[in-house]
Amino acid sequence: MTTEPENPLVPPENAEEKSTKTLIAYFTWAENTVVDDPSAVDVDATTSASVLAPGHVAQMAAWIQAKTGGDLFSIIMADPYSSDYDECLDRAADEKADNARPILSGSVGNMDEYDVVFLGYPDWWATCPMAVFTFLDSYDFTGKMVIPFCAHRTSGLASSVRDIRAALPDVTVLDAVGVQRPGMDTPLSTAQDTVETWLEGFAY
Image (cartoon, rainbow, N blue to C red; front, side, top):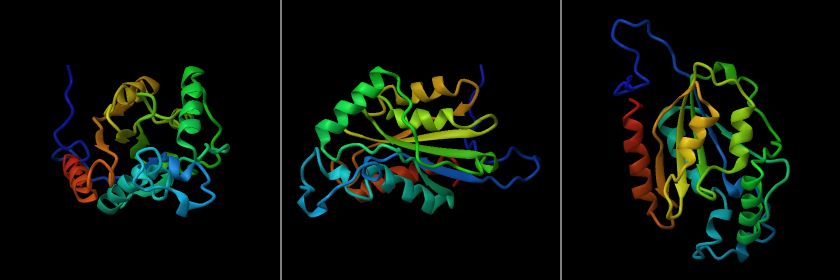
């Protein structure tokens, strides 16, 4: 049985020093919908606030970027979701049931240059949005290290990390951090501390 190194991004002693290039790819509802009147959104409503930029996952991605210096990439769908919570989740449920692969509107042109990919997403129906799996299917992750991070409500990471590992069977996928809706259920300062403490395990 093999075990992960304590700080997996640190080269072993006597190894040739290597510059690690990091990508922070993330999916957030706020960047995959159109809100006609942001001022009409009730920021205190549990079903509405995450539709406004920056969105919970994008906020986590920004904290990771600040600590790692990695490049940000937002996973954007060609066909945006409704900004209505129930309509969005109904469509997401149908996509999950169909094991759909929604079309994305952009791509990472230099994916082969990255050694580490932080992968962010919300917990939708106990897994990642299907667009995240489109992203995973779109590139060769051989030799890369994937590190998930998740914003969720009450179900935590659910089966998301297991599903990512199943999609990338020959790729090292490290344990994820999950935060319950930064800025809503979890105060922003607490959420940021959680993410930064988690990052310390990777020697960033």
